[in-house]
Image (tube, rainbow, N blue to C red):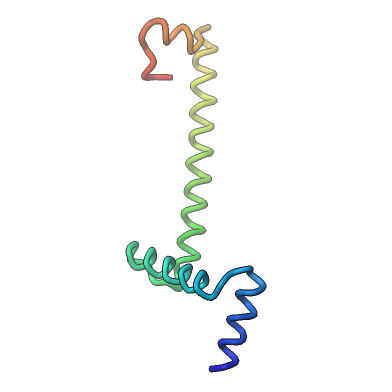
Amino acid sequence: MESLIVSLEVFCFKQNLSIKQFFDSIYSMYWAAEKLNIPLENFPEYIEQLKVKKDNLIDQIQQLESEKQTSLESYHTTKEDLKSTGMQAII
């Protein structure tokens, strides 16, 4: 038991964390995993999946923005033209 405590103290020191901060972080991860109904041991994988989804959504948004800009250019239209005609919702 003592070696566990010493290892924890060394870990926290290297991470520049207090023991309380360490346990607060563990509690926060446990609470989030429980709220999302994900086993705590699968939580890091779940976070990585969310990062991939986020990156994919950002790519899709950028692609749609590019397509929108191409469409505007093909009709020789600008965002300002659409705003002046009251079509702000599509820009």
